[in-house]
Image 1 (tube, rainbow, N blue to C red):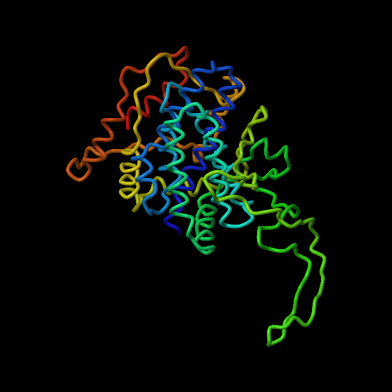
Image 2 (image 1 turned 60 degrees about the vertical axis):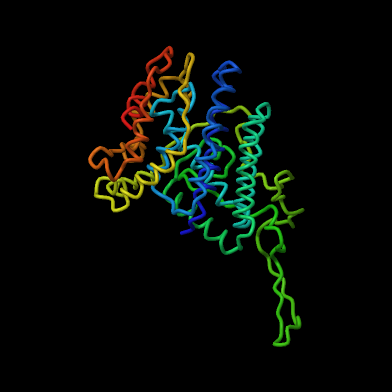
Length: 377
């Protein structure tokens, strides 16, 4: 498992989260000033310098539940509120989109281009905020400094670590199903056409060499696909044409996006029992959350808030909450640090910071349950 995977996982999932929220803010006709504030507040928290320092430290990936807690907090860094069903759907869309992108990367190194596509799009959301643009550019430079010199083997290990993280997720997404890139069982369809990885040749030819390294024979074969040579390599510079389209905003065209739990995903019930059994990494995960969330600067929201619904109607949202298998519902991790204050001073401090007072009022109480859970952190 690569200890350099977490920054790429977090930034790419964060980019997908911003794509989805931007689309839903527009679909629900949220006033432009409120929508911009939500995105700016989330991006400001996401790229906070102290937070990035913790994120880029070499460390192994932790459980989906631990990471979900971070995104729960991030999504509520502004005046917007999501209830449990909408947060579940948001996280499902984020993870399935990134799984698809990692699976289809032509080369392991192209995971970095996917990340750059997300950062390029994020900069588009904040083009009128020089201070936030500077924070994103700083993260860009950190990525170039840390990942620019890695070998192909290092990137292969990063890609494998990402795929291991996503391997049990088979949630059907309407966009993927309509585009025929996902089967009804939730598994993705790998293409047998299009450009081959940069630096490689179109399959169909076998060359044979003698012991002197001289080519002595060529044999052609039918590969059954429709491949073409890659036109050029994507740019790994701060500014440039990435060429690769994976990681760009697939919600730029306004269309409804639904998720459905695949039958195969219900097999996760047995794995969910792991959360009941004592987890030897639990303490380490709490320390991870303490460090990571300690770097998050969550500014208290002021002004009237609102609830965002990731479903078409409130009824659909309620039905989704009732029908979702319990083992696939990511509840916020309840961090208990009061038993040993001496050993968990940092965690206790963060818990105090997480207490939200003077919460903004909004027109509906749908988000109260999630906020109550957040307050318990």
